[in-house]
Every structure is written in structure tokens, then in C-alpha cells.
Image (cartoon, rainbow, N blue to C red; front, top):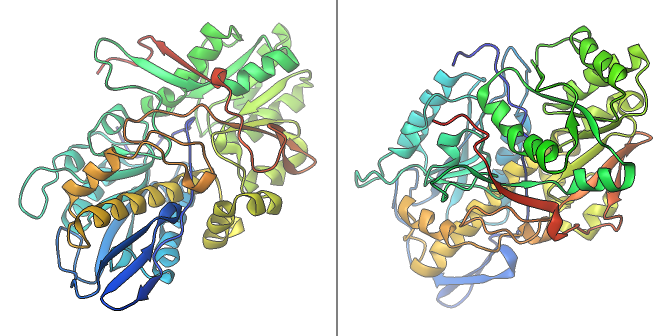
Amino acid sequence: MKRTTRLIAASLTLAFIATACGSKEKGSGTTTTQGSGGATTSTKAHEATTATEVGITDTEIRVAVLADVKNALLDGLFKGSADAVQAFEKYINDKGGIAGRKLKVDFIDTHLASADVKTALQVACKQDFALVGTTLALAESFDPMIQCKDKLGAVTGLPDFAAISVDPKQQGSAVTFSGLPPERDYSVKDGQQFTTRIGAARYLIDKLHVSHGMYLNSADSLTAKNGNAARFYAEQQVLKIADDGNGQTVSAFATVADFLPFVQTMKTKGSNYAEPGGTYQELIKFRTAAKQVGLSGVTWSCVLTCYDQGVLKSADLVEGTYVNMPFKPFFDPEEQKATPAAKDFVDAVGFDNANGFGLQAWASALLFQRAVEAVVTKSGVNGLTRKSILEAVAAIHDFDANGLVAKTDVGNRRPNNCMVLMQIKAGKFVRVLPTEVGKLDCNDTNILTYKHDIWPKS
């Protein structure tokens, strides 16, 4: 795949926060560290840190964040992820560091180019302990990550704490873990099995009686298209919200004029539902076209890509749009008060830089922190290796990011069943389900597990 016209519309997506880390209290012979979730670990004060692994010295733990930022298609696409992990460096170091060392973050821009992804993975394998906050749209191969050798020369792999993993080669790798696990279950070998969030669509069916409409998937890459496929299939084939567009796709390069045939079809067929599978910029163009043809009576739905202050700059156009998220809101000061982890994220990254992608990357950093703490608890500050941290994260089955998300079995890569449905009203994101600040809706019917080969077989 070439670097030029590719984009991901990550429908997953995901994400999470939490933790207080690292203030060291020197006592007689021990150092006590406050870890995530309030747990404490104690190590002997005289235990000198050493260089235990690639990217780990006696004073520093070096990690890399790979994200598509500068590119010709949509400049700044995953800037939120890079910003979040870089902010996490200062956040964690201000609290005393991690595993007796300072955290050092290397940002490697992959520019929406598969060749740049390959190079970045090769570089990170040689210089960094792990990947944190990975957010990639295009990659021809993840072999440099999966086949990465550790300090002893063993093929352990490069631990990947991904913000978003959509490509099957990344999702299915033994070294990739995420606070927002992927929808596909790779432990199922005799076909494709997915667990996808459908709570928002169920609500819109029950309350607003949506029944048929236009789904727009990505035309720019198979990876991006796959990212929406599981949700679109469940909504169309299981919930029976019919597709009036018969599988239409749209490019991120599309202009408002390119959306006119879609909205004209909707007008002709009397569609009462619309769901774009891309960025919030796509939603704005879609709704601009709808306004031009006088389309009305449509319920508009978007995933967490639309939980971004940028969309509110076109508040009049996007009024009424529903936004489905798997985490608690973080822009509202009242939400921050109810969930302090949300305030930690916004304060560290900055209000103008905070968005859904950034939250997922921040969460991946906190998942990394928790795995590091687990290794230190078990084996001390010099027990940290790529192998030991992969074993530690695989044993985490209750990651909740200090309450920003529901408890999630990240070790077994199982999505949870909790969500928040927001709506854009008068230039603000307003809670719809549940309405109470600081809460998640965790109805069992919010997720659906089904088996069907909806992705091309690789």
C-alpha cells in the first residue's frame, strides 16, 4: 500500500485513563511507590537499577509512540495520540518516574505511509523497550515488531500497548494489547468471531425508531474499511437497520459535492438514519451536503472520532448528532470532578489537544504503567524485560483506568459492555445514556457476539 491516499476511520474504538504513580518516600532501607489503583510496592532502597533490556538503562526507560500525524491526506490525523503519550512522559516523571527510572518518549511520525511504519518499527525495536499509544492506519507488515529480538537475542517481540489496533496482523499478534480490545476474537480459529458494541443503535431503534439509512465506509484502505465492518454488519443484519446505500464508500479526499449523491439517495428513499465511518470532518461534509438538498428527518450517528472540540466549531451543522463512546466524557468540568482520571488527562494534554484518540493513547500508557508495576512487585526494579512485561499485561483482567471505563479483560482481549451515548446540543456534548454524570451504561445488550466472515480472509 502506498503512502498517498489512505486513511483510517477508526470505529473502535476506544479508550481509557487512570492512575497515580510514583511518588517515592525514602525510609530506613525501603522505597515505597504509590501505584495505579492505590496499590503500593516496596523495594529495597539499596537495590541499584541496572540496564536490563533494550531501551532500559539504570536511569531511563525509553518507549516509542508511533502515529500518523503529518500527511497529505488529513494533516494532524492522530496528533492526539502523540500529544497524549508525550504528555504522559512529563506526568509520570513529575510523580517520580517509573520503576526507579525516568520515562523517555520517542515520537516517530509514520505519515500515513506503510514504508514509514516499517522503518519506525525497525528503529523502535533497536532503541525502545516498548511501543505505547500506537495509532496506525497503514502497514504492509508488522514483522519488525513481532520478530523483534530482546537484549539477549531471543525473538520476544516488541511489546505494543496500542491506542488503536485495526490491522489483523497487529490485532492478532501476541505482543499487542490495548485498553480498548479489538472486536475480533483471534482465539477462534474456525472462522471470524466478533464482539461489537451495538448499544447506541439499539437505543436509537427503541427511542427514535430508526429503520433504514446510509452507511458510509472508508474507500481509502482495507484496514479502515475493516474497522467499521463488524459494527455495520451487526446493525444492518442483526438489528435490521437497512442499508439504503448498498455498501457505499467514501474517501477522505471527498468534497461536499461528492456527498451529494448519497444525500439525494437518502432523500429519495426517505432514509431516517445516517452513520459515517470516518473522521468528524467527514460528518461535517456529509451534513453540509444534506443541508444543501434540504434533507430532514434523519437521525445522525457517529463514533468516538466525533468526540472532538473540532466538530463543535461547526455546531449549527452537526446539531443533534449522537456520539457513541466506550469511556466517560472528559471535556465537562463536572465529569472531571466525578472522575478525577478525566481531569488528569485533560490537565496533562491540554484542553485544546484532548480528543478520543488521545484518550486511548493515554490509557495505553496507563496500561503500560500498570504492567511495569506488576513486574516490579514480583521481581523488583531489575526484573523488567520485554518478556516479563508481556507476561504481566497478559495477566491483567480488570483494567478500569481508575473508573473511566468499566473493568476490562485486556489480558484475554475481551471488550466490555459499557458505553456512554452523547448528543451535540447547542454547541456542547450532552449526555443521553446514561444521564447521570460520571456513570456508564453497562446493559448486557450493549454488545453482540457473532460469528461471520465479514473480513477478507488473509
